[in-house]
Amino acid sequence: VTRQRLVAIVPAWNESGAIGKVVDEIRAYDPAIDVVVIDDCSTDDTAEVAEAHGATVLRLPFNVGIGGAVQTGFRYALAHGYQVAVRLDGDGQHAASEIPKLLAPLETGDADLVIGSRFVDPGGAYRPPFARRIGIGVFARLVSILGGQRVTDTTSGFVAIDRMGIELFAAEFPHDYPEVEATLVALRSGLRVKQVQVDMRERVTGSSSITFVRSLYYIVKVMLALLVASLRRYPRLEGAR
Amino acid sequence: MTPVRVSIVGAIASILLILVVLELVRGRRLKERYALLWLATGVGLQRMLVSPRRLRIFNIATGSILASSVLWFLW
Image 1 (spheres, rainbow over the protein chains, first blue to last red):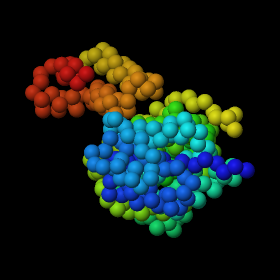
Image 2: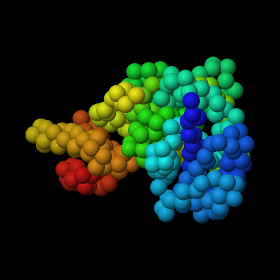
Image 3: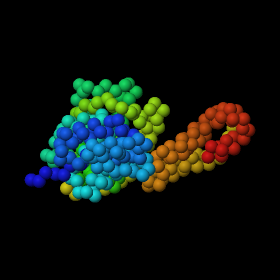
């Protein structure tokens, strides 16, 4: 059996302080992984730093937001024939050492999309602040109901997908705050979704894009997106396997 | 007091607004981000029709005399 080609998709916007370490860590974990950093039109030297650390850098000419950056990565994976893609954030919160856990269900053929969840194991280390915990819980419940499968962490940006998932997300990926809706789209398209427990680290530099004011927009926008996504029809993808 | 017929027309119009906006988002012609403002307008109109008292408070607050002009202004 030939080894499946594996790409790590890393969206980054003004992460010059963290991106070098992120790239190093992935390459140290497995030199066979191709690391692709999507630089979402940073104003700092994120692209140069990533390149210096050996990543392939896709430079977006405009700031398109996280959804567009991640989708660019999936399109790259599709065009270059990768069988498996891991997506992790450019701020260093996702540990490369957790990647094997995400890949395991793909390698055994048990899943098409594996979500690194912070809440599979009730004793997990991550305890979000109260408001955030409620929000994450509401999203998880909504996606579980609408998607017909229980999921615990729909806001995680640490996922691995197979070729079918790459094809789906290359064609169809939400615009901003994409993770929750993308999970529902995957479920409704018939991807087999699995969750594995991961721990995430506190960010090293920079700040979360989710400020207090934006969180309101985030919640309402995602609610609307979920409602609309459940009104849309998605082709079932099982036949592709 | 808003005449009944005005209420009915307003109710139909604002429900239509909400449905059209949802359909535009579903067909990817309108992004969620912009749809939210239109939906807020539609819901706001609905609520004023259901409770004219709310409309009157709005009238006093904005100094407008004709209730219908407020509705059109919102639209």
